Length: 512
Image (cartoon, rainbow, N blue to C red; front, side, top):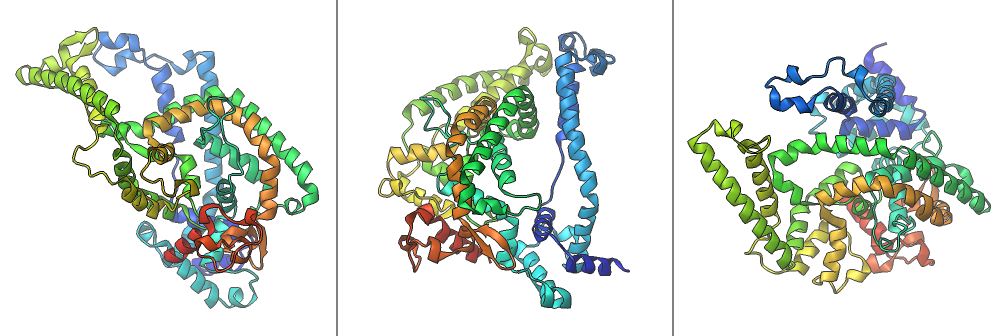
């Protein structure tokens, strides 16, 4: 049997289409592993370098600790063992997935006729069109298959679980506020908390094949299911509390290695803004695949920055100008010194162990960051028009914003969604402390509402199974005439907030 015959046979005999199409999409997107490098390099830096000897030597070999691994402290060794076990598990999963990866390569190459070198440039719509064509042209799958294979069905399978998360955020079902009087209005939804919510909720509601467990469709099970969800949340809260030191070390190492090159090349990036994880789930639309969503948000970054810069920031701008002037002056003087004596760059110490090169990099970085925080003096004041342009991409405009787009109140709420990258990093670190609190106290209070949402927003589709009804664009059940639906849902509770379903429908049709 040829490779083409084997690939065709596997396609005609796929049992789990959710898993298959998820692998098709993952292969299209591409995946990578960096954790092994982070573990190894971090261990080397922590345990194998004697930093006290660096000022007295000029060679790396002179400051290396001999047999450093055996001399690691008990705490460092424990950290290392846990990270190695985690990496080993990920590596084992990769090895076990290798046959499936090879099958996916054959599927793209032989059936879809898309070689690896074209993966990065071919449009996703082209992939879907070819999948639909081979489904309809294959006598086995075309005539006897009980499954739907079209763009809507494939996307619904890939996003079967994510569509429910989008619905939970849209309906404000998840209480992810920090249980503290001064922080109750702050949504600290970080990647750590995102993973915990997905694990506690989605792995509870969906089985190992990614299908919704039918017991969640019956109201009589509401109390017992809610109690089970609360137990899972509290348990994960304790688990996060116990492993908080390890999570913190991993986050520090990961973010350092990931962003150092970017910020070293352009220090002013530290003062730039980005959309928070919470904002991304608020903006994400039903049946919107990740690469489409990423492209949509990336298109409005510059507009969002221009909008935020519209508002007066006299104190911040004054401080930034002062810091830029002082740091620029020092950097300029040091640069002039090096022009007359290049050896001073490495040998002359301004402070103990602080050479001109060190301070030139320090003051240059501070200057770049502070300059990036100074608004353009030539900006034309038009915040309302700019925010409307931003909303063309985010598709997000709460009712309370209407008529107030020019106000500082709206700017403040928008800046909670579009905040400084440095602040996002700090929030990720603080989540080590706050994630257990949210899992212990905030999320358990809405366990019943979460269970209700899966029952109320689920519909069965022939050839597709149980899916989020919002993702099927059911206007009879969820339609809101204010956002263009021809029919209006009898129960307002079943409508999506802010016209999310109607906007998702239009966005999905445009991407077709």
